[in-house]
Length: 455
Image 1 (cartoon, rainbow, N blue to C red):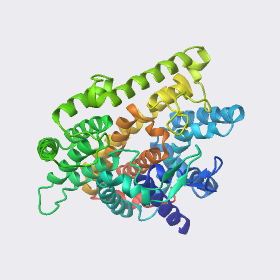
Image 2: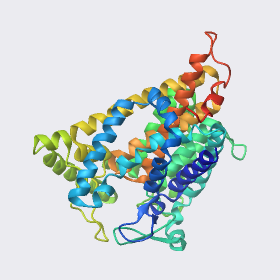
Image 3: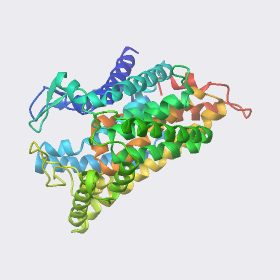
Image 4: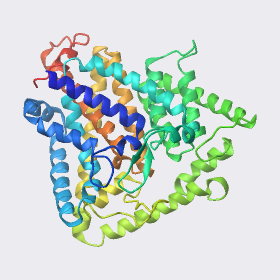
């Protein structure tokens, strides 16, 4: 029992650090500095491997709900490729396999979610971390000043990065926090529950000035339209009003340190959105547009390399091989092509790509089925929890279109850990459904089942 609580605290603390500190915390290693320190994520995986005898009883329940066949193919094939990569290319193969290693947090999330008292503890933690994330992300315009005061962490590439205020994941936490406020109907300063979340989303567009944010906002509206149509309508109207307010403030001379240093105007939005596919490469969006063209060149080269031989096409290039030749300003080699799907295709070929999508299609079905069951039993708190986790997962999917999102542990670990928690909820709901009479479920009767750690 004590081990279960210790691991629960460990995982929630790890998730909190990745959500807030992001890139800086990702660089924390044991021992610190150099190229051979072990990241905390890998140490956490090792800890769960060593304590696996305590979790053997949960394997059966995990197999009942998880997409076990594609997961076994994914892990078996992937770790075999990683072992060959390590033999031929050394330690960089393990670094390139970080997404594969981090996907083990599906199992870790499932195991931790079986801890007695997890459901209530997680509900409190999720709301707290969303609130902290919103406040923290609002400090983005002050990032340079704040980062100068933050401790520096040495990276394997030979540079040092601030532990805090890097905002590498952009507006991810701000948007997730906005979803939580909308779904919980939180009133701030007696304002309508839509007002503050809408302003937060408008702020994300105006200040972060990232093309991915447009896709994430569209995904947010789509998600709300599927499950809360009225809330989606109100949020859309509030967002438009918030954008107009920010337009007026920028025109009135509001001076905010935005990511691109550009004034937030309608012309900027139109041109910046068009830069997603490389259009409008003149003027103040020439940088983003050229970045799109650069990515297309990387992807084209990867396609040529992978399709050059039947073996590469089927099984991929493997781990340890850099997928680009581009070097960052500090001469650090960019090893991933800023698109997680293409990285999977390059590393593991058609077999890995098909398996990856197979896993997530099944996970999506489980997510929607669990939402329906939670609606049926009337558990609004955990319905909101699932929607907030689902929103984060959807935002990550949008992020991976133009970034190496799942190759970054501070994105991939919460992503997969949330899937593990969702699977545990699905298992508990399934057991409850099997035990209940045809009259239906008792209100929240599934929660004691979810708290049992023996299965």
